[in-house]
Length: 116
Image (cartoon, rainbow, N blue to C red):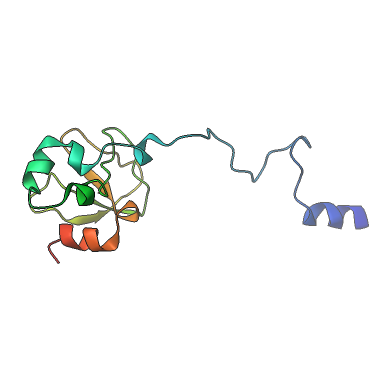
């Protein structure tokens, strides 16, 4: 009986025959994290022509087709005016959008994008 209780409290070790409860998947680079920035997008660079290039470099653009994280806040800079939205399951950046993840933008720049 003691063996059963001990087994229930201790998670299985890697290679112990089960991977239940472990986060297993592809590791490595996330292309959505090393994508182009607002400075690299010609129409955004023109739209925000009064901004410093260094500020535009702080605004990553999610690549077309990249899945958005459910529950995360984003902004589409191609919209007029840009507005925040919360991603739902299955959402991805579509052609023609310039989606920016709030989590990757300094709050001062995010507020400036919103016109605050």
